[in-house]
Length: 536
Image (cartoon, rainbow, N blue to C red; front, side, top):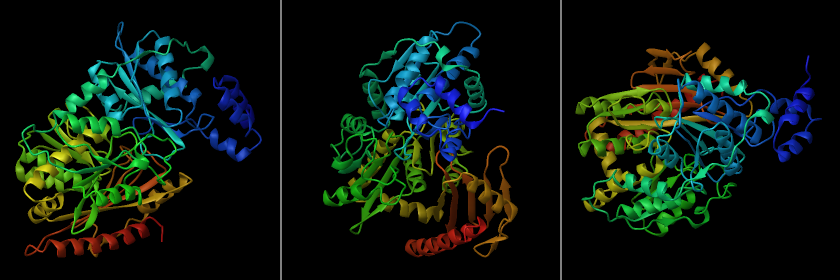
């Protein structure tokens, strides 16, 4: 029987990176650390690999990337009955290791006899998704960990249709990776072809087509890329669409893989938007917009009565859907099982096709051939599926600007439009209970707890439906009257998430009263959900 140390030494002998070999040698006598690094290989989660930057199979490093790239090109070759001259497009963000991982992928691709096209510099994930279709590629790879902590990186895979991979492709690629064999025997070629800036200009030109050229453009925008790669593309897109340059948070304007001003580079995290909102107030901006570090997500805030209010993803999702519907955009509007039920009500009343999918844009963009809009509550919006078949924080931000500028011309705000939706459909209040863990086993324990002893009632109403999505997905849904709780593990972070929704009717036009009742109900529902998960 092979010991853990022998397994580690075998890995060392095959690791192509001197730095990670040195790192691994330093922990050979640390049994717990070694066990963690060799607990198993990184598994394909949301569209690919994601994990901490460290040596060993359970981390992101050059050896893991070489194996992943070799498995991907082998799987692509197996899908073709004959020769395939389509390239593979590779993008990367500004995280630690991203460029090196992109180049290593390119060398594996060219070593297999296929062309590798690299984006010209660190760029947003939506540009890579756009480039896959623009260059009629066989697949795309984006090296990014999106909004994860600075010690992480990832490897996101797109199929030829420009969408994130889904089963059975993910399992097929994973099998191919396990069959790669010694990394020293993987053929390596040149570093690939670096695309010029034309691909960025083409993306910007396409993005401008999202907005109507004949509507108001007067708008003051405060913006942050949150130490990521979104600023240049976003500001170029705003300018091309006819908007004024945004005010940018200076401390977060340039890419920085250490993300020094935020605890987590995720606009959803408490405190992450503080600098942006302070800038917006100082400059008397009309709206505030944040992208996450790879700019596939978009957060929005607006000012009312001297206070800045950050919108939830469900609120932005409803606003953008309503805006497109009012513009006459016909087709399917889709969201996920964890997002607000408001979109389904809007579609039903307005006679539009509605789609509801599992969590993730790999499912949303496949909701139907007639898809015109999709969103998920985690600040992701696909407003132009014909351009980018994924969430896109740049085009979403541009559409938010169009909506806000139109409302400003009428002396109204995003908040006023939300009030109108509440009057029409009731207050759909959502919240999230998120539990970050060190040991992933804790997530399994919490899921087992709520499955084994689900609550009999929620907010004093009997639970009338329990939907367990196993084995299709590790999701549990509880419904009681107009209350809903959805529990699932995060697909990208070591978290358990519970998505809460209560629907409160607006009586006599009293929106403020309805919101107060909804907020109180959500607070009580958080407590009940925590108890059901065994947290109290």
